[in-house]
Amino acid sequence: MDIEIGKIARDALIGVVSGVGSAYVTLHFALKRFYFEKWWERKAEAYSSILDALHHLKNHVEHELAFLRVEPSLRPAGEEVLSQLTEKMISATAEIRKRADIGSFVISEEAVSAMRTLQTELDRITGFSEGQQATITDLPEHFRLRLSAVNKCLDSMRDIAKNDLKLPMTTRECIVRLIDILKRRTK
Image: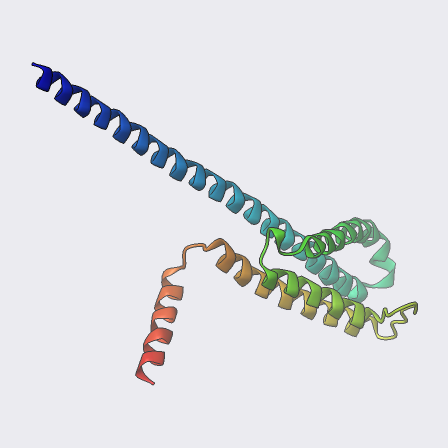
């Protein structure tokens, strides 16, 4: 009888220890997943705000280019829209600078580099340098260069965000990647 009680107590102790151990492991992995998902949400929000800001920059430049082609007599009607777009462009530029300054705390270093390259390119196009005032002589060309710089950053930022967030690939992207891998193996 004493042997049976000892065996029951031992089995109960093993059950309790394994239950506590499995609960701890489950809790550990659940918390790890929770933190990962929260961090992923922060990254997704950051990339979303960056892409939104780049959209506003692009939209402003495209409207500026279109505004240059409008007859002078029709321009007063478009000036209010352009003024609103300019406000959005200013806040978008501030958002891009803020995200670049925060750096790779949330987003990838590659994304930060792309935004800093855009800032440098826009400053160069505008003609700003240390302590000098910009003078733009060819306005349409100025806006085309700005549009090109923003489009280049927008395209690269989409790919960077997709890679950093590890979004699922489309079927086409899977096939292209598979073909690239097979090509490298046959070389």
